[in-house]
Length: 124
Ligand SMILES: [Zn+2]
Image 1 (tube, protein in one colour):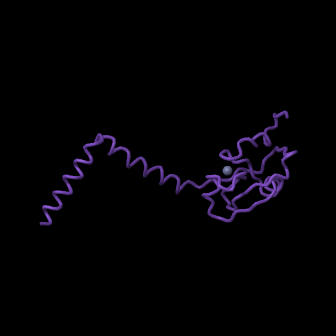
Image 2 (cartoon, helix red, strand yellow):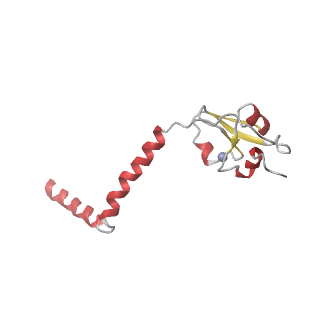
Image 3 (cartoon, protein in one colour):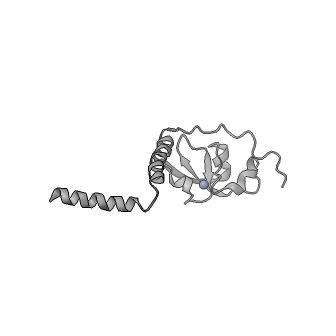
């Protein structure tokens, strides 16, 4: 009885597997695991304090930062995918403080439009 059920399940698995090429099925899985492992073990180092910045006109803009030692960005969107992964506390503060007191750079995901703040060659 048990054997028969097992054989039936095996047959089902085989028929499922035959829907896709066996080569693909075998190579996809280990690759996905490697990526996960790398993300877990790679410790991000925050960049040093910005050498140059000019936030004139947007210094009072409210931004969000993640209070984590490995974070060096600020976010304009409270639901930014980068911010959601924050394991520490969030803070909502003005842009000037985020840069001057917390050495933050613009988040490439939600604040790419503010990259000019750190661009010495930018002419408004
Ligand atoms: Zn962001």
